[in-house]
Picture (tube, one colour):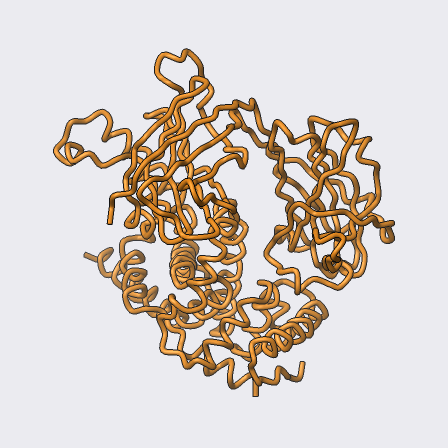
Length: 359
Length: 182
């Protein structure tokens, strides 16, 4: 019986003794800091520690612990243990990119890198959140990364450096004796705006159209989606993934340099929200949507898809977000989005060649 | 001296409450997040919240329901955090790998491990109802009160969860029969 099997399986899950002891210790000492806030605390402690290291000539700093280690240590201690320092840099367009460290194994690599305004450049491009514009790669001259992901870690004011973690994967194992990491362009001066998304115009039946996707993802795997949201099987003529999306508004009516909510529809248990990012060829506008239910619970979408459409020679990017939710009355729900705007696009390129000698 | 005694009494009281709800919180957290490290964080957060708020409970059931409710909330906040979203996108495969084998700190038989990891493939809202229904033996109405959902919503989620779980277990080669009277 499933219930018995499930119980037997979970009976083996118990909190480790050291976790219980540690929790009790924290309780005895008055509750301590919130674990949820620990990340923010981690980052500020890291920044503070880095600042102290830069200005104080104390023995521990004489050992030269790079600031990025302290940042990574607080973000992911396990990763910090595996990193091999590189500290090689390249300057272009008044910005210095430095490959701080790498963790490489087989065909996968994690790179910690920093960007800062070059000395005497007289400019202030690096002063907060930035984006690598999906324009990075790692090669060993025979093998190039094919998949990548990038995470802005923090802007460290004392050093005037923006730190990133880049994860890369190639088709075959990297040869670590000579590697080249490159970034082609960066977006400076990014900022966010939180705005409501109006659900009052939600329609209950909508025309659809078939589009060719350039991206999809979300917490819910595709095989868990209702059939009408699943990708159309590829054919020999068109092997690219295609899906049916809402056809509510012409893309030519959308703003080129801003977000446009193209419409919302609720059908067969799925709330669909379509948003146009405009022409993203020199920017990286993107949005995180939050659906708020009648009890005030908020959540991200279950899945999203994205595609491009041509408008007068420009390529507009459109996203459709899918929320699988049993909604009795849409008026009981609300939505807001964190709209991420990007600033100035600076084209490098920045390129660093190095050897990994940590083994 | 008097205040020291009071402090000691209060600490003992907290310890008792923590030990009483320790396994419930940890198992539920582990069912809703992917790795041991994440479950550890949620576990501590729940009890630290308890100490900060020190709510008064009418009964043992009330106390247990409060801890389950707060654990679910902490897990939801955890998944909603932009940091976690970015981390999921970046480390999705690694987290899956971690959750599916290397992180197995408990002495689970292969069959149990398969079951736990298969349930973890379900969306969070389904994992909540599965765990509360099958492990905690709560009724649909009780789950509704804890998750602040209508009983009909819980019933729908449970039905869908079973259907998806059955399909997943069949794909994994399991021979479980997911049934239960709602």
